[in-house]
Length: 355
Image 1: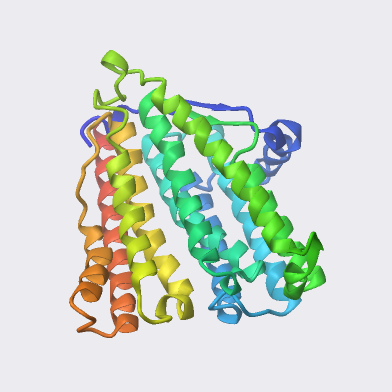
Image 2 (image 1 turned 90 degrees about the horizontal axis):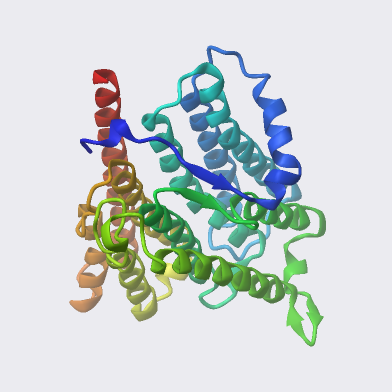
């Protein structure tokens, strides 16, 4: 983290919705923020709003196969919209007040990595994907890969790039799904629309196609070579090296979910996704720090003990209750994530104070 304080934010935004209307809207919104409001406070408030609205929705849709009252979906849509708005104006507030810093960028990415888990749960709850075999886990995997791949490409190029269809468009798709469910009800997603295919299958299929195209774009950027020596990353390491931490996220949880002899992970899919998301969040945050500090990405992290414990429990024929162990691993994962984020923020703030 020695060079973290020297980092300068660099991004290219070609997002269709951003250019069409959202930037103008956000520019207007930020003018309502008092100059004394810290940008990180705006980010934190957005995260808390997103968390609270998802918790309310999860109370009604814990297995992602239940229907909730309309107002619950409305408040989740509103929560995501507010999060999106606050997440967009925090950087504008920082530039407006002259308080832009690596700490602010790191805090923003950290909150985004956690909120990405909540957004994933939102869409799964709204479309009752818990009723679809492997549906929630598949969406969770795609979500984690996309978020990680975006920062992987940044680690290679030194520049965060937003494509025509990116975060803003994806968030508006989720908001639209939530509003649709609020108006027409969750059972509408199981209605057969075209050739006997349920509406949710059609929407998920289209989303997967878009996601694959997006991931393909990231891979093209990565494989084109980085800005470092001989086409390496900003840290001078191989552009392929971040693949290993990504596999450390995906493969263990895929094995755990696929080899379970019980329905515990489907019955507690919210808990499972939260655990999976925490591991993905911390690994991605390590990648963000590696990019910002131009340092090598660590291969091992202690948070991997969470999926490792679940795997070993299966291997040794379940000496521990799967549900209780899942609770313990989820708590451990979030404690590990919290400690890491606190440590990283503190180090970054200290280094900023020295410059």
